[in-house]
Each structure stands twice: as C-alpha cells, then as structure tokens.
Image 1 (tube, rainbow, N blue to C red):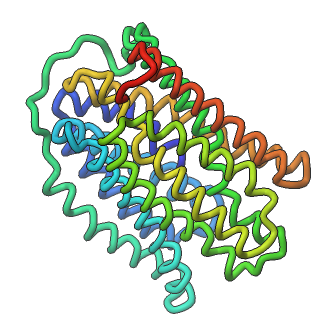
Image 2 (cartoon, rainbow, N blue to C red):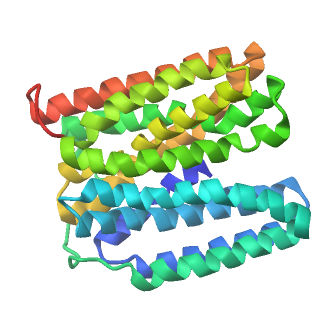
Length: 341
C-alpha cells in the first residue's frame, strides 16, 4: 500500500497535465469502495493481498496524484498551507478509522465492519469527484510520462534521490512501533493505539508545516524537522515503557508529518505550472521504490538481529542522508547560503 499510493503518479501526473483526471478519479473511487466491501468476504491470504494490498493501493494512488497537481494550479502564495490542510485528511483518517474499526469488529463483526467503511468512503469520495477542477487549461508539453530531460536539472535530480532514500527509512517507525511495544511487554490493547497517536500528532505537524513552509520555504523547514524524525527513529528501539512509546509516537508523528505534507513543495518551485503533474508523478514513482523496500528491509534486519536497535540505526541513518541531500538541493537551486526555498 505504501508504494502503490505513490507509484501511479507517473501515469496520473502526465494524464493530469494533458487534461485527463476526472474519469480515472471516478474509476479509482469505485474501486476503493468495492475493495473495502469485498475485503469483508475474503477468506484467504491472496484475496486480502489483492483487495487491500494491490487494488486499494492503486486506487489511492490514482486519487492522490491529481490532487497534488490541482493544488499546484490553484495555490502559490499559500501553497504550503494548502498542502498541509490536504495532508491532514490522511492524518485524520489514520487516527479515526483504526479506532472505529476496532470498535466495529466487536459490535458487528468483520464483514459488516468492512461494508460500513466502504459506505463511509462512498460518502466522502463523492465530494472530490464533484468539486475538484483544474484552474488552467492543458498545454502541450514535449516528452512522455517519464521525462528524462528533467534530470538535467541537478537540484531536481538530487531531490528525487533524497525522496527515494527518505522513504527507505521514514515508514519504519509507523510500521513497527505497535509491534515493538508489544515485544517490550506493553499491553496490546494499549500498543494498538500508538499508530493512531502518531497519526494524530502527524496532523499537527502537517498543518503547522504548511504555515511554516510558506514563511521560510519548504526545504528550510523540512530538513531540520526530518533530522528530528531521524533522532526519534534512533531513540525508538530504546523505549521500554508506555510513556516512552507515547513520547516517540507524538514527536515522531509530528516531525514525519512535516515531510509527508510538504515534500512535493520544492517540486512546484522547480517546475513549470503546466508540467507539475508529470514532475510530481516522477518523484512520487521514485519515492515509491523506497516506500516499497524500506519496511521489508527493516523487517529483514529485525529478523536477523532479533531486535529493533539495528532497525532504528538503519532507518534513522537513511533519514539523515535524505536530510543532507535536501540541503544540497537547496544549495544547488539557490546557489547561496541564505534564501527562501
């Protein structure tokens, strides 16, 4: 799911630039609702993988890509705030839906829980399908979906690499924090809520980052906050108490939310407005590789070392390298020490 949310951006981004996004968004919305309802009927692993892993991930990615392009069309001065508000939606869902699902499973059982979630999605998805619109008409831009000429720009190339490396480490804590808490002896009824706590804190990070990025620049705020996320990733394996895990979840959620919210903001600055869809799609596809490989690599390290300490060192180091590459991107673009970017 992590990877497939970003992977379709290569196709949907280019389609957005040439004026096609309503039909793919409508089809993806139908698939999203259908997969949720069908998951309630799944009884074998491959069925869950097909519905929740592949179909749902691709549908989410098809919806996510064009929304980034639309924000680039409609907002310039307050673009960071727009991105932050937009990103708060996934934070809200990531906070509320797991808690609601846990309650519904007890009250109505698994099949009806998934149907209820499907009906909620049907209601929520009606609004973007009716209201989202481009501001600018399509413009003919040379090149295909993957425009290799874009990588002649050193800042763009370095920033794409930083995105790949960031996602190799960024999802590790969110993937394993509840499992690691249970392994440390924390009650499972409590550890379950750590992901929701992190997502709630992420919402504050996403919103505040939007305001800050508009004031001082995307990378100027993202790079130091990404280092904070790295520090918490290093510290996470050493949490042994409820309070320790809650502190990690809150601070990490806030800091990582800054990156998730605004990592596309520098692309808007480096791109022509008529090429935003393709440029954002390219970096999302590159980032998808990191999102796909990061958690399994962390899992393999855990399996081979028998603990999460080495996992934290690996994931934290990836985030530190990504932050350093963000700073390099800034210097290549501005060619000076001080400046907003």
